[in-house]
Amino acid sequence: MFFVGVGSGMAAAEFANELGIDPSLCFGDEGGAAGDALDLKRGLGTMWNPPAVSTMMERNDEESLKALGEAYKSAADSIGIQNLAPKDMKDTMRQGGTFVFRGDELRLEHYDEKVGDNASIQDVLASIGK
Image 1: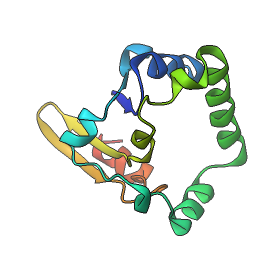
Image 2: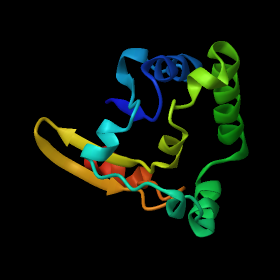
Image 3: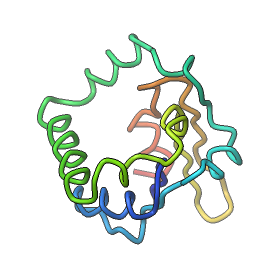
């Protein structure tokens, strides 16, 4: 399993360390080349989605959201917010996606349309046979 996010490789490694994930599995997409290649959504119009935010809040308990916030703050404190955020702030307006492969076989393809429109954990687990 690999994780890719906006920002630098240094930011991805620091975030991985804060969350207890092997940093060799985490990559930064500085400049958005991977996001462009995958045709991930971007722009201000993708940022506001109250129904999806409500759904996101329902599937995450207060403890998990607090842990994520603390990890982000700790990473920012460790390497500085300027080093954590992408150099081009418009890259923060890129939506993500979830892609699961087994070898060359695409098992799951989900494009986030707006903030909080993530693949369901049930779909991800089903795609890996769990």
